[in-house]
Length: 438
Ligand code: HAM
Image (cartoon, rainbow, N blue to C red; front, side, top):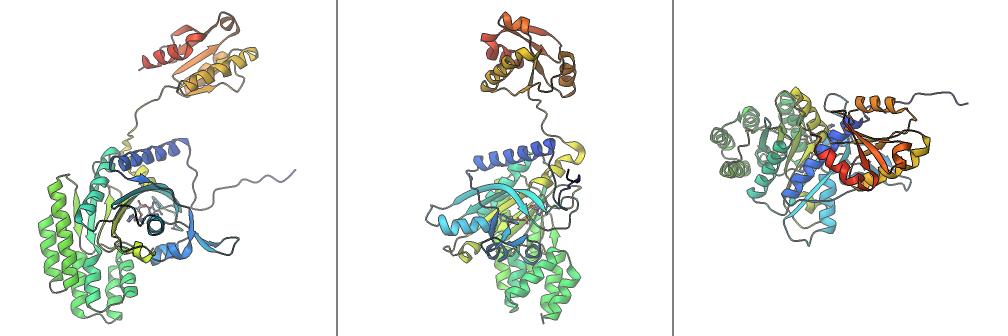
C-alpha cells in the first residue's frame, strides 16, 4: 500500500465550500442580471492568453505577479490577471465592424501572485463590464450608474466611489517632456501610495521644481464637493494645457452625474492613480466603509483596442471583485438572501421500495423540485432526524404497505403533519403542499 499523504491547497489558493460557492454564484447571478438590464451581452474568453498580450499594459506590479509558463508547444503564456486585455483583443480581432457601442459582460476567475492576505487572493473572481465605442462622458456615466445599480442590488447601499482622471498627472508629465515609461513608474508609485518615493523619483529624473510642487499638491487635493474639487484642480493644473482638458473632462462627467441624479456618493481625488497602464481618462474605485481595499475599479481606456491591432476605439469599463464583495456582505452580517428554498428528502422504508423511491424522485425533479434521496441505508426515524438537522422542509416516506395501495406519505418537517398522497397525483400535490409551507 502507498504511504498516506494529506494534500493541501497550494499557498494562496482556496477551496470554496458549498455556502461560499453558493454566495459567489449568487453575486455572479446578480451581476449578470445587471448586465442584462443595461444591455451588456456575455462573452467567454480563455483563461490562458499570450504573455505578451496580458503583460503589455497591465502595469509593472501586476506584470511581476503573473503566472507565466511555457506550454508544451513552446509558447510563452500566462493565466489571465484581468479581463480587459482579453476583451480588447477580442474586439480588435472579431468585432471591429459591429455597430457601436458594444456592451460586453464577463465573469470568471483570475490569477495574480499577490501576497495572500485579507481580500487579496491568488485566485479570485470578477464580474466585468466594458462599454466600447463612445468617447462621450455619457459612457463614463453609464458605467458609474451600472456600478450604483449593482451595489444597490447587492444591498451595499453604503458604498462610495473614489474618482480621478489619469490625464491630470499624465498631462503635466507630458508637458514636462517626461516619457511614457517614467510616467508609468510614477503612476505605479502613486498607486502604491508611495508619495515620498514618487517625489524623489521625479527629482531624480530631472523634473522641474514647479512640476514636483504641482504634483505634490495634486496628491493632497481631495474633496467630496464637486465644485470645490474641480476649482482646486483647475487652479493646480493652470497652464498645463493637457491636464487642463482632463480637468474639464472630469468636470463634465461629474456635472452629468449630478444631472442624472442617482445620488452616488463620491470623493474626487486628483492624485489618484491605478496600477493598470491602459487608462487614458476617468478612473475610479469602489469602496465600502470599514474595508480599506476596493471592491471594484475601472476607468476609460481609449487606446488599448488600437494597440491590439483594431481601429482607434474609445472604451470604458469596470470590474468588481466578487470575493471582496463577499467580504463586504459579511461586514455586520448583512446576509442578503433570506429565502429558504423548499427541499425534499425521499426515504425508502426498506430495500424493496428503493426502485419506487428513485422513480418518485425523478418525477419530482422533472416537475422542477429539489429532491434528495436517502442513500445511507438509514432507518426512517434516523433519516427524519437527519432531515431535521439539515433543514429539509419536506420528506416523502415510501413504504411497502402504502406503495401497494398506490400511495406515499408526505411529511411537513416544520409542522410534523403527514399526509397520504396518491402516486398519480404526486407532483401536483407535492407542489401544493410546498406552496402552503411558508
Ligand atoms: P483592478 O482594480 O485590478 O481592475 O481589479 C478590479 C477588482 O478586482 C478590484 O477592485 C478588486 O475588488 C478585485 N481584485 C483585484 N485583485 C484581487 C486579488 N488579488 N484578490 C481579490 N480581489 C482582487 C481591473 O482588473 C480592470 N480590468 C478593471 C477594468 C475593466 N477597467 C476597465 N475595464
